[in-house]
Image 1 (tube, helix red, strand yellow):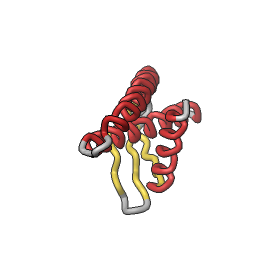
Image 2: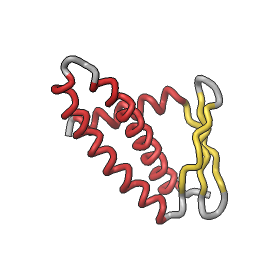
Image 3: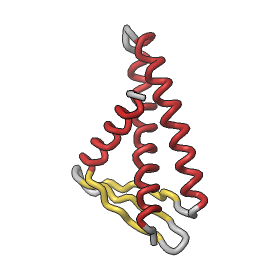
Length: 113
């Protein structure tokens, strides 16, 4: 079982994980743009910051013996997130649109730093 602090830490980790994956996918697309020299340094800096925070978050979860097992898309609206904890495994259901919005907000907040 996860207490509220652990759940919040895991939620942050999940958003960071999704942000890193999204930025890595976008990186290859931006490399092919005509103005890539303008966009790539911005994306690289953002990816570096997010990745560092991701690994810090992952280490914190490891200390709590919590890890992400898998993401399972239920349908176009929901995704189940399977989490291993010290006690037992937990399945958390997230709305896809909410995750997308939270990841966008996370990236925007890091961009504005």
